[in-house]
Amino acid sequence: MAGVEKAALAVEFAKLVNCHNPHDGNCCDVCSGCRKIQGGFHPDVVTVAPDGQFIKIEQVRAIKGQLRFRPFEGLKRVIIVQDAHRLREEAGNALLKILEEPPRDHIFVLLALDPQMLLPTLVSRCCQVRLQPLPDIWLTRHLMDQYQMTEEEAAPVARQAMGSLVRARQLVESKHLEHHQRVLALVQELAHASMTDFFQGTSQWVKDSQDLGHDLEILQFWLRDGIVSRLLAGGVTGRGANHGDSRSDYLRVVPIDYVFSVYQHVEQALQQLRGNANRQLTLEGVCLIIKDLLYGQGDWYSIPGGWQDLSLQSW
Image (cartoon, rainbow, N blue to C red; front, top):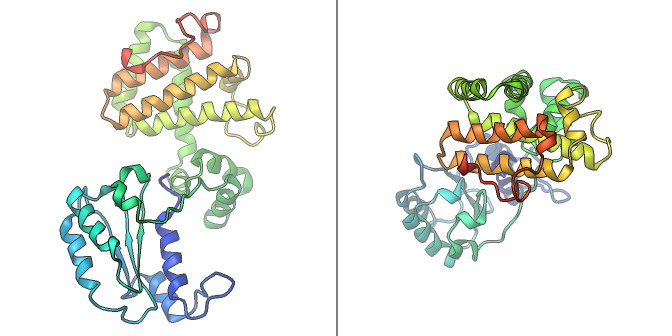
């Protein structure tokens, strides 16, 4: 997933393979090699990033030119390809030719969101390291250390970050908790509204929203938090962002299968939004489903299939 600091891990790996005094599988962080790599000016650690939207073949050719020489001062030359899933096809094929016969003392690290987004031939020549979402407790401690937050302040932010360090930082720096409450208040207001006011309200929401995808992620977290609270029999509720929120009481009384279904539809809406779906129709579809979740208890399964076959595209 994005935001788990794949690039930072790649840098730590580059430090380890070039460290002059490694200890217990870790770099020393004090030798000249570690300091230069951390500072970003080691001659044998090369970072390739997209030039615009893509990594172009000219960039791969530039790397190939460097491979004719042995590492200048390090033990290994490490080439870090950021957003490798954005390699143009011709650039990917050019990189494949290098990886088929990699030069000695050179290590390539390809960072990508999903191996399926890379050429299969590239993936077949790589050792895959799958990174999991960062634990909430780790994110909480990080936020407490970096931003001098109390545990009560940091824990809800860590949980909303859903395993992403980058997102956790953004939430703190953008005062996201206030926006989080505004989004949930908007949903509650639309759930109470008449259908005329409902469509006017969603239209205004789309106009005012700076990042509609982020707003849907807030709704997704709210649903996720309600599901986790139910599954753990209240073991998380006391620490969650929903604690004391009357909107969450509804998530504790409706059938949990229905909450799962709504969560899946919000996830589907996010995917459609990333595919340039109509913002207005996407938001209306999500809010109508949540409107029924909150205040349509008498009509939970009025649609054939219990919402299972409902597509947001039909709204």
